[in-house]
Image (cartoon, rainbow over all chains, first blue to last red):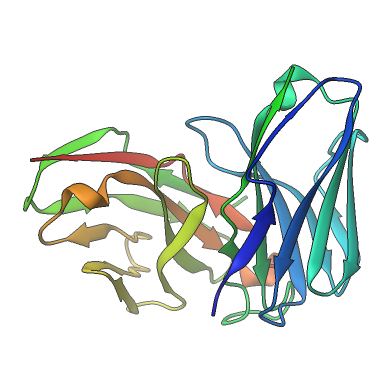
Amino acid sequence: DTEVTQTPKHLVMGMTNKKSLKCEQHMGHRAMYWYKQKAKKPPELMFVYSYEKLSINESVPSRFSPECPNSSLLNLHLHALQPEDSALYLCASSQDLWGGVGQETQYFGPGTRLLVL
Amino acid sequence: GDSVTQMEGPVTLSEEAFLTINCTYTATGYPSLFWYVQYPGEGLQLLLKATKADDKGSNKGFEATYRKETTSFHLEKGSVQVSDSAVYFCALSDSGTASKLTFGTGTRLQVTL
């Protein structure tokens, strides 16, 4: 089973709202990723957690706050977003971040489509 | 740094036509190579992968061969279906620098009856 689940599927929020995106995997993977994808573009990496610790932050604005409560869950807390933050947010997981060949394959969830008004 | 170059789309084909989507890469180490597919309104699905030179990845009638001498990983399918209409992303992961994916820009495939 290579399933990554994400909730909600769609989210509309105002610029003063606080909301959270959730991601879950039960493959025993120890690396989890957040990506942002704008229309007609490839995904852009935002954050990487490895063994529940933040390993990579690609200079993402502080209005995005990731959290990894345990090895199966990844959250992305959203606060004071701007309309340009509207995008598809994708979660992914892989067996390991530094495990090398064979452990680096990333499996993606279906995404949360976010609209900021 | 690492980079992936894909052919510009959209690619429009009739059903049962032969498909080739070109992908070339630049990497400092020994990358693994991937093709992901994104159907309209969905996330990315892993289509196939290859982890070393001369490996052939295959899935659902699609295949791609890791060519180190030409730094290429072209995607092919002998007979496309309307249901193959999607955006295809070529990507690499250079295991020497953590499992970060470098994506190409994506190629939109439209298959018509």
